[in-house]
Length: 224
Image (cartoon, rainbow, N blue to C red):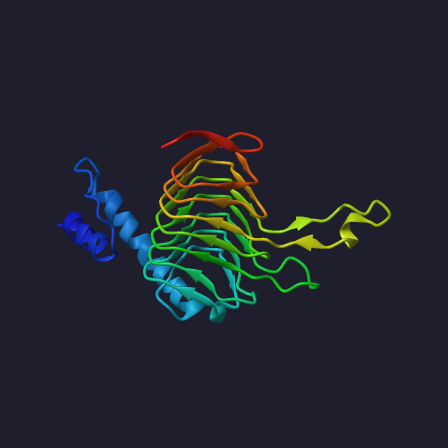
């Protein structure tokens, strides 16, 4: 009974997988209760149907566009102060203990992030969105991933690096991409659709569609 209800809820939210018959009903019941409390908490914090974990802080929620069934897990910090709307698409998820920082310094108002439908990142992710981040649809990401959409300028040896300003080219991740754990995306990088980024990679360049990339700095390992 509980399984069939949960399956219908999954299908209604756009999930197209079937529940493993070995999953115990006790686990499904626990998940339904947890999601129920998260929805109540999300409504109290944002006024909208968002699943929000405990000890999560959301600043300036009026500047955030939430799709259906968005999840922001436990102990997250979401900075909604950005020059553009922050967009979290349908069924987008930000894992526990993650931080989204839109404005890193008062000298420059940050741009923010747009995350597509059915895209999710794991725990302990750092989303530095001051220079702007675009993440496409169906992007699955592991834990400890970091986005750094600004880069320090350091060419003038007669000035302190912290006084030379930053570049803000932004970061763009396409659709249907698998990102392994502990990947770092640096300012100006672009990853094309239908690609895989190996765990631990430092992504600095522009990569075409259908690429498997990895390494420090990342390079194309093979083509899908």
